[in-house]
Length: 423
Ligand SMILES: Cc1ncc(COP(=O)(O)O)c(C=O)c1O
Image (cartoon, rainbow, N blue to C red):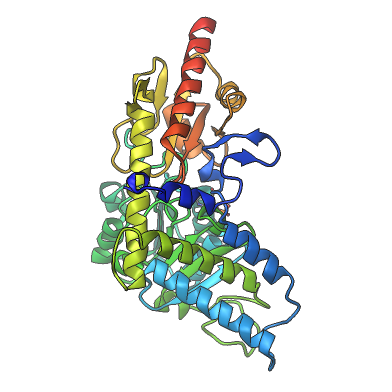
């Protein structure tokens, strides 16, 4: 366990910027990781370094060659982290844009006719891309309906819609509202059994910082992550496309390489900072395995992160030391249930007698940063069926500590008392 190895949690925390103090608001516990994780210090340095380089790629000079090596290394590092079976890694404007590009390419490249299938659990990024390109290509956009009780969706919900003429499917790996992971390998296998040529796109944006990614095992055609949610920075998204999806036609400059997914000059800093993330995970994983193989160390890091977060989640929900957990606090409801083995870094909750906005403010006054999620175009897909107007999303990462969870639980006790007085 990460927190049980002497000095390791401190070493982890020392690698991140603004770990316990907000540069604008002062000391705070950061439980807003699903809105964007903390940033590695190495990423901050690398970003500044690359911002200063004037050289372009594809030139016959040492600077240009160095930048192209950085880009090649970034792609190779991402492919290793994803355990990609061939295919292409590319950088886009954001996770949303990468998802749109993957879905657009799949919808336009698939055989005409048939259907497109997603789920009601998806973030609007993939769901909107699917809806738009289903409309443009004249296909019905079918939706597997997620389970309100578990906050997830699975084979059982996808199955009724899987027919041999299914052309494009989308799956969210982990919901950013419920925080519950979907068994993507099982859903892809169910699709392949009936519609082997279906192009499947997975939104890995919430999952990526919480557990291993294994594209070889999933058998999908597209995957998207957002680096600012996995210890890097804003300003880019990373996509992966299978050879099959890459062979579909795409917009590109005339005469450009047909396998290219990217347009124009690359920002070498985006690739370099993603390599920083992979180096960090490699370093972390090295504490949990003696393996000389890098992929094995990345898998070990994912396991350590998962275990540490499970411990933090358990403490939040079931209590720790003399602090009772959320599951015992009167009036607190946890979306997806307090006992859910699929939980990844998110606890979304409501408190009877207190508006979510007031609860976020009360927690902030107690030095704990969380975020409200409203029944709007971002989260209405999860909150509306539950009849909830808004909830508070508490999102944690492996660098959070049990002391921080205790500070949060203490603040929640104050909120529970305040709500009870007002009721
Ligand atoms: C699951 C999921 N998909 C897509 C997005 C959108 O990502 P981006 O902000 O990089 O466009 C998010 C962001 O919250 C997300 O959690």
